[in-house]
Structure formats: structure tokens, C-alpha cells
Amino acid sequence: MSKNKGKVAVITGATGGIGFAVAKRLGKDGFTVVLNGIEDEAGAKRVKELAAEGITAEYYGFDVTDDEAVTSNIKAIGEKYGKIDVLVNNAGGLGGRSRFEEMTTDFYRFVMALNLDSVFFASRAAIPFLKKGDNSTIINYTSNAAWNAGGPGAGIYGTSKAGVQTITRALAKDLAEYGIRVNAVSPGTIDTPFHTQIKSTKPEVFASWKNNILLGRLGQPEDVASVISFLVSDDAGFITAETIQIGGGQGLGI
Image 1 (tube, one colour):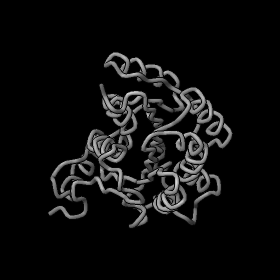
Image 2 (tube, rainbow, N blue to C red; image 1 turned 45 degrees about the horizontal axis):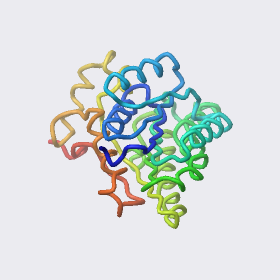
Image 3 (tube, helix red, strand yellow; image 1 turned 120 degrees about the vertical axis):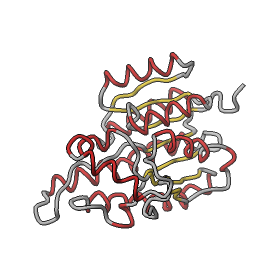
Image 4 (cartoon, rainbow, N blue to C red; image 1 turned 45 degrees about the vertical axis):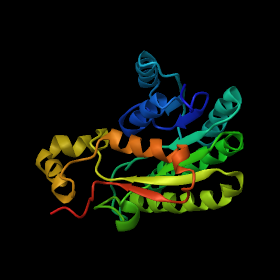
């Protein structure tokens, strides 16, 4: 019997890409997984896929940038199971590109909400239930853009991810007295739908990215999922306030 049987993991933005790979991995690790997303049809499909592999899963549709929706849904999940053991704040994204001179206030607020507000809303709502969990853990996602401020037009994305980097450490400080650990992962270039546009419009540029990666390949969603599997496990019980780079030595390629 899995030592994770009876444990509950909530993963936001989990209907595709890295989020779904994380849900599948934690499900195989024995967790009951609760997927969040905004595409209900995709959510239902993913739950069926997981069930076919013997994984207990369900889907809650809500927008992670909506304060009230996040709070009410996380509360409903926590009350249903009596606790939450793992919260993976996977939802986020580039949101588009804009230079600061032309950037609208709405775009600025959207990107900040998608990447930073979402972490705050979900974490705040989950804390009362994480206190009731076993080796409870929050996992956030930062990015190389948090350090290098992102590529052209991605400056506000980098700014939001720098905020995630700091709120991860701040949450770790705030929750240590309850034994709740908080860490972040920083995925490098992972081959997901996140890069669909450049793959279709500039495939040669996308293919060249691996030349800047020491291990000579792009990452896969499972590369991230396996690290998160470790971080939420008892084996990582003395790790908190850390960020794990998952980039194959990105930036060090020849």
C-alpha cells in the first residue's frame, strides 16, 4: 500500500502540459489528485484518463485570478477531504508580450494576477487545510525570467515570477511553525504547448534552443513532475524555502 494513500494533492492549471504530468505522477505516487482548470471539457477528459490508470482524481473548474472563485473552491476541496496535503501552484503563463511603453494597465494586471495573485489566493485559502495535512507542502513555479527579466516584451512576466520567488520564501517563513514546507521549481525550456506559437512560426529557432542547454535536449513535463514528486515526499522533509532549477544546465550549453 502506498504511504501516500489518503493524501490529497491540489494542482492548479492541470488540464495539460506540466500540470497534467504532475497530476499523473502524484496520482501514481498514491495521492488523490484534484485538478483545476478553466476548460471543463478538458478537465473531464483528463480525469477519465487518470481513472483509466487507477488514479483517484476529480476536477474543479475555476479561474485562479478570481479571488472569490479560488477561495470558495479551495475551501470546498478542503472541507470535502478534511485536509489538503499538497498544493501545487502550477497555473501561470506568459500572457502575451508587451514592451513597457505600450503596455496597458489591464495587461500588466492580468500577467501579475495570473502568476502572482494566483499563488497568493490559492495558498491563503489552502493554509487552514494544509495545517491538517501530513508533511504538508506548497510548490510554486518561478522561472529564469525572475533573474534575467525575460526576453523582449516579457518583462512583466519576469517581474511576476520574481514575486513568486520571494513569496515562496515568505510563505516558508510564515508556515514553518506549522511544519508546512514551501518550495519552488524553476523549469527551463520544457516542450509543452507554452511554446506552440514559436514552434509553428519559427521552428528553426525553437529547435536551436537546445544548443544553449548543457544536456543537449529540451525538457519534458515529466522532468518537472519527478522533481515535484521528490519535493512533496518525506525524503524532502528538511527542504524548505528553496528553488530547484530544472533546466538541463540551460545557459551553460556550448
